Length: 301
Image (cartoon, rainbow, N blue to C red; front, side, top):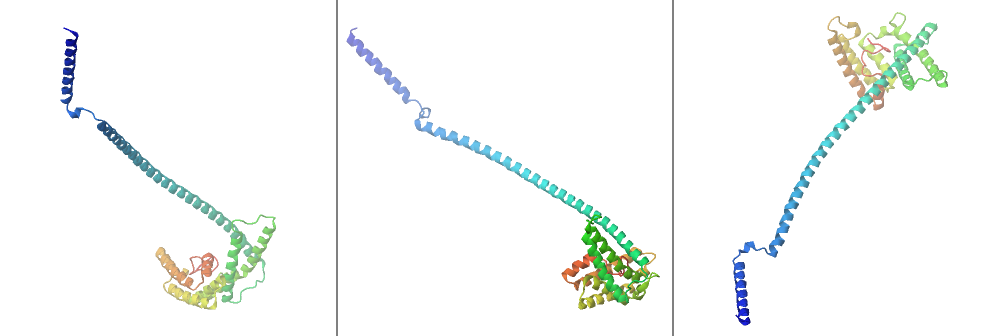
């Protein structure tokens, strides 16, 4: 075989192999042939799945954090309430301690003061006695106010002995005791009655107590007439129902006290309607909630 024949035969074999290879490539399904466009589309799809999973994880964490925040807020509220309760307890305890101390000081002041009053009663041969029931009532009201203001000015902080303030304190107490002595003597008298014998009727009690309130609160004449009229009605009702102390029953005392107190509440309510705001404040401070049956200093009937 010559060189020319070999060359032609090699060329033919090469062409045949190329043809068969082309046919085989043509018969491959297109779906198995990756394309550049398909490769580009697969990457975004994978990224979306990853982002979705990441977003869901973040949302889950956010919900957990919100739940924890709500729990902390609830706990904070509970702690705040506990703190407020503790502060209230501390305040209440402090107020109770102050009231206890004030009560102790008041008791000491009363003991000292009325000891001096008793000394005046015993030592004085002649006291400047009130000339009438009306004068006794008026002076009792005025002195009741002065005594209350004296106690309030020193309450809880009595001046130390040996100081100028303590000297002034003693002088004021001595002067008040000297003023109180004749009024108490007039109210009580040597036989335990004194001018009180003159106020044993509803009208007499109402007039006496109206004058006492007049002196303590500084009522105008019109206010005095209004208070006097109201007390006259309530005392008439009280005496008619046997609610005065002399008519206290042997049995059923609780019901009797309840009726007596109910009548007093009505009297206090009406009497305060005739007062100015300042006088109502003084009424609460000097007289309190008990008006009826309290026609004596520190006592009742």
